[in-house]
Image (cartoon, rainbow, N blue to C red; front, side, top):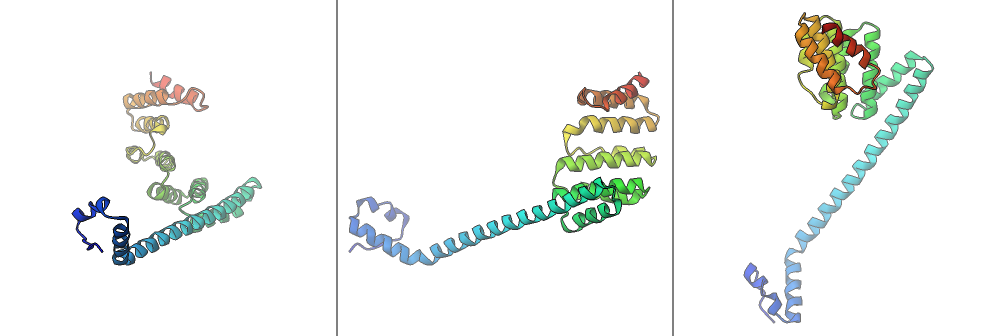
Length: 220
């Protein structure tokens, strides 16, 4: 029987051993490393099981959140504002990291503005900016918060809010709000440049484009 040697160089010589010697070498290798092999398989199994459990749990959360969101929309279509708010707050509390929770946060911010509760609206929009993993949602929240700050006579804060761009596809809307802020600051040159940049980025089919064009024309 061939002596089993554990160096890398000798393992490279297995092609020159007889079939019986190779089998014996393999048996000795398995005997020596069997615990490590079993541990590796066990770890892989645990990882796979954990991943499947996480996927199933995530799917259940999304399904439950979708159900609550549908109920919220149903209440809203019936003009039942109180029940709508209840469902929206349920989404925000129990499903904050889902798309439905973030959409509900936008709705609660809008409701707060309608009730002149601007502080609550700012808190809702800031939450989306700080926590959403969807860059488009973060950008929408920035634009809405900038508009709110502009309505509250805070054009400086509005411009600061728009300094960071999460989603470049919103460049048209961003530049329009910047133009409004510069106009509020009595800076028509910068306002005109911002409106011009907005027109260059907004599709001609948008309903808001004529109003934007009018803003730009008034300055030229």
